[in-house]
Image 1 (cartoon, helix red, strand yellow):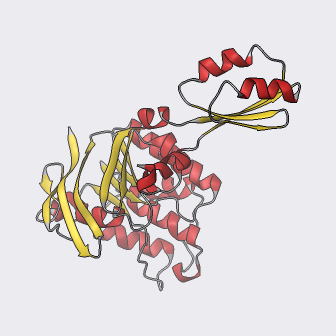
Image 2 (spheres, rainbow, N blue to C red):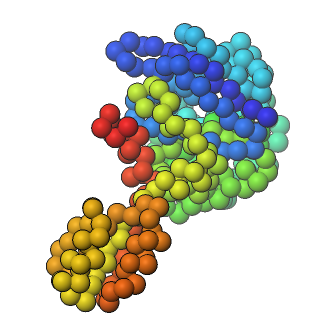
Length: 295
């Protein structure tokens, strides 16, 4: 079942800004990573999903409902964490959370305490005196406290320290196990690898790839740094490969699907050290971001 459907939407702000003929779906019970550099069109797409702006053409729906005409119905079961949260600075953190709960017409704040404890949030202070990380925790609480079936998260761990980022990842995995549907825009690629089922990659307002994380990660390359017993041995081994870099007795070699072949050939030599570096998802996505020469 498709919980979110983006069908050929275009929102053109001129000068190649906006999104153009964009289509993808988010399935029930999955986390879809929505990835792209700043200015790629991620927030523009999210604003259309939330009913804040209407596309020039195409349709956007959540649970089969039109995101603009039926936004009030969708909001009843949707949690949203914006990339830039607009707070009322004169309020305390707890006052803001209660204000947001009232706007959502929530009667039970039971989950608020659970979330505040998980993220070690003391929400009693004035928001204007809080750090970016503290404000982000308040945003997380407001997004999840309603226990919604659908969540749209725009850079959710921005400003959080590594410990809190890990706790957020744990929360996402728990929510997915409970059958929640999540669209998450993120620049933290480890977070995407750990949580997302699929990823949609956008560049300059246009979709360049949508695929499972498993398939995307299978395309990541490895780099092997092999130290041989002597320089002559290193040269002899490197001569078997077109793109091997030799420095003294050390050979650096990019490895793709030929890993088994490389390992078997290494076995014919005496080596003193071996280091394997797997391309990070961030490095892999630069392929999509980098420009025409990387297409």
